Image 1 (cartoon, rainbow, N blue to C red):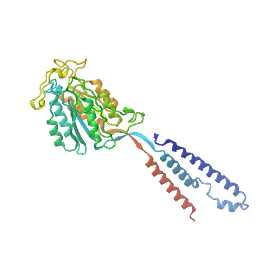
Image 2: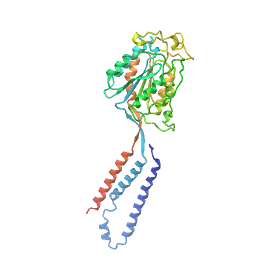
Image 3: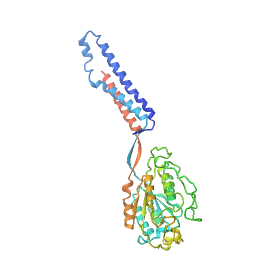
Image 4: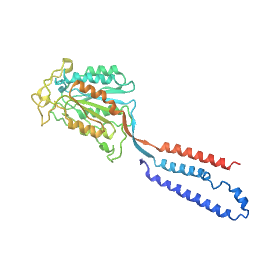
Length: 374
């Protein structure tokens, strides 16, 4: 348990003080009572007065005062609470590497089928948004319960050059911020491209200014977990713009969990997308680091950067999943709701303490009136 205003706990000192005053008054009455000469009259007047029941009203009042002092300090407890009618942002990688045929018929077609099944399996209260990213990230469909709009957008995605995982996370944060006033939009900064001139993101890529998982202000204070989540599906590594690690810090500072899914094998084969999937983009060897999808600076961009994705999950409080084929991806997405149905949040106990205190005060008053009524 923690307290929003711990200084007000000092008010609890009044409870033992009042208890001491009450005990002093009882002792003073006993001393006065011995002055009576008529012992029979004294016994008659005090019959039953020594019973513990006569102390119940004051005990209730003191308990109420203690709870009111506790409530004034704003007590909170951190607990797991169920997440209902959540919003899910699907961030889908549509880079040219999604044309790799190590997953039949290719990574993109398998991903589209799995994502379709995931969307169709959501309940009517869950809103789903779609962010697509390659050389830059964009919100294709704002969070909605309209499944037809989502499915049409999923079927219509086309590939592009580059992979901006970090920017995809931040675009997803912006989509959540438009729905949830408790989530601030991502902060923007200009990040240079890392995969060659002329291919930079046409819009500035954001960068985090928060304090990461320790708190939005960097103070280490706990951050309430947002009910909205980001599911990020990618088959490669970040090639430009803000890094996934820096983007994850922004998500964590806002209480947004990210669940990355690494898709594809470690032995990608030739590229083969349909004409519609290419969308005017023809992948070249240099788009993936060299002939045959080699490495650029030691990084093979056709293979999932698991270390980076696991770091994103750890920073944001999400979980990383790996899928090497279509069936595996479908299963990961189908099981995902089991991992996100609860979230940790700070629960304010002030109101509950105040209600119990009021009930105790009323009970104490009622007992006092009952005893004083002849």
